[in-house]
Length: 94
Image 1 (cartoon, rainbow, N blue to C red):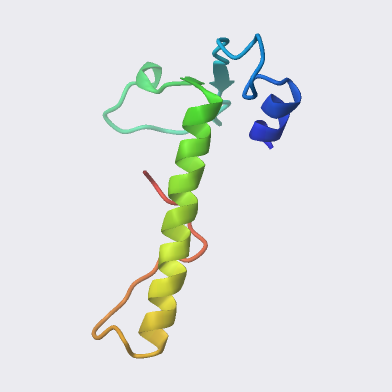
Image 2 (tube, rainbow, N blue to C red; image 1 turned 90 degrees about the vertical axis):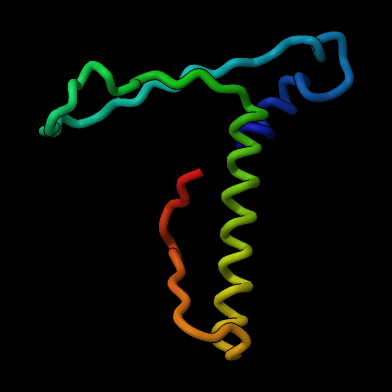
């Protein structure tokens, strides 16, 4: 979705604007929670990133998910011995 928006702005294609670097600032709104031995002001609430970095993270996440699917199929076909714990449907941490 982000890539589509950027392409519609013609920032990724060959144009006179190709030297422009788009930087996104994402502000996190967190609910109040109780912390233990931590200072709340140390938690980052803003993240500066670029569309390229977000796309790179998404590609890594999708690659990990595809790998899990292949491992799951191999385990079910008894090609992998022993115990196999998968994180199906859970968010990956890179």
